[in-house]
Length: 284
Image (spheres, rainbow, N blue to C red):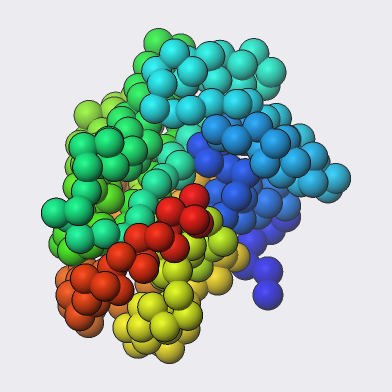
């Protein structure tokens, strides 16, 4: 069922971080169907180029730029390249993320930095790079941040992600006030369980664990990428021009059953954690 007119995003240039795989790619494909011009950035060149090539077979244009959002210089170069190619950016989607399950006491500083670097620092770097240009040029724009249902509640066993996403949530709400006078909107989506190949191998690496996590959802199923992509398309469109600072949860009602999407993992034994740790490393 089509929810939108085919030209909903016509004329908009949208930059998506982590746009070559998972939910980033699902959003990218949907935006393209709705008339947008796309710019994708990511760390893995082959995956990024293949995604751009496959998506460009339809309508609209797809531009790919290699970028590690943890590096401010690469972020600057990426935005320069997109701006030079299209002449503008209308929408920024901060989607790039990193996460894995682990008891917090097992984490090393490097493991913590791996998540905070992508999720919090990367989102902040990209937000500043694009936002400063919009302000300097007097151009309005929209930023959509992908957070999570436990950004406001916290969750055991994904503590670096919870802390980083809480920071992104605060960034969203803070800039919704500060940058609104410049015509810059801030919106966010808090997804629940949306299985993707990459995230699934790190967050639910066994069928038993996947069933346990999806069993928390009152609707009895996990989310479909198209459902999130349609929500994102609406939020970045002109139809949502009066929505600013809002975080929309899309999780089938899961968070209402109790705070912390992964907190039920308290039942996992040390021996099982050893096995899960091996599986999540293999899934990277």
